[in-house]
Each structure stands twice: as structure tokens, then as C-alpha cells.
Length: 218
Image (cartoon, rainbow, N blue to C red; front, side, top):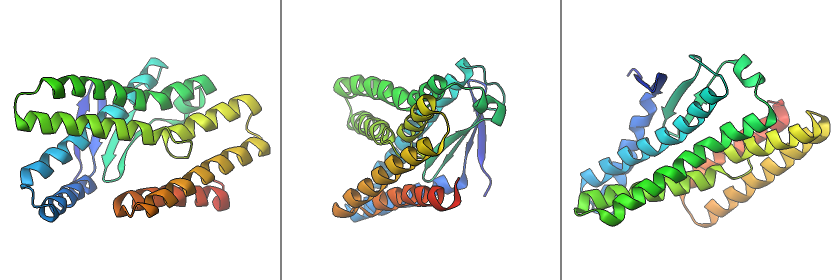
């Protein structure tokens, strides 16, 4: 299965085939809770829109800082990310990196406000369900991404702030690793306590990234 590609505001956007796996997950959820399949389809589409808006926030902020055609958005089963060339990344100051990282959650919060207005004015069940999903997903996605753990946006902001103050030294690397790893383990413990397998799996990947940073220095 090939990726679906299109351009949005001149930015190349790719939807990885793994994203289709979310349709299976929502189908399972619908069957488990005895809901019609269209409810799951709406959920998947709302998640796609939420992730796309989030990543678009990063991409457009990068454009404001001078990045060009190198910017690419990829959406996959565990979220999405924005790719840019090394020179574009290197010329960003600490403040620039913080602004780019915060642009994703900010776009999500703004989209949630629009969806909330749509929710309170909706006159059909389908529109109400769609708007409600968008509000919840964008708020949760934005808030969770502000956690100070890498590779989340909050972790990138924390790393840029510490490196901006201390420079990239052994002390700054230690502080970033300590804060990021502690936050990741705390989030993993919390998700495990609430017995949410999907969230636990997602946070487990974040823990793995932090373990790799410690032992492989990535």
C-alpha cells in the first residue's frame, strides 16, 4: 500500500499507510461498545484533522522563520511529524525552536475553540458528535504534547530553553535527559494505573525514545 500525498498551503503532506490501522481500532471500539461503524469513521477523520492541524502549525511557523520547500508533513498511526533540512533546523535560535514547537499545540487550541463554537451551535447529531470529538481531541493532543519529555513538543521546548541558557554542555544534556526521562516514566505509570492499553503503548514508545537517548546518545 502506497502513501497518500497531497499539498496543503504549498507544503508536501504524506499520509502513511499505517494510519489505516486506526480505522481498524475505531471499528473494534464501535463493536465493543455496540456503536455503528460510522461513529468510528467520524472519530478517525476527526483524529486525522486534529493531527494535521497540529503539524501544520509547526510547518507554518517554520515558514515564518525562513524554511522553504524542504518542509514535509507525515501523518502515521502514532501521530505525525514535520521534517525539514538540517540547515533550516541549525539556523533556528533557541527562541525560534521554542516558537516552532509551541506552534503545534497553539494551532490545536485555536482549532478546539472553532470546534467548540460549532458544537454549541450544532443542530444535528452528526455535527454535534464531530464537533465534540474535535474539541476533545485537540485539547487532549495539545495538552499532552506540552509535557516536558522528548520527542513531544514540550520536551523540545524544554531542551531549547536549557540549551539556550547553558549551551549544549554535559550539564544541559544531563538536565534535559533527567527531566525528559522522569516525565516519561511518570506518564507511563499514570497510564498503566488507568489500564488504558492504547495510551500505555504510546507512552511506552516515548519511554523507549528516552532510554535510547541515555544509552545511545541520540
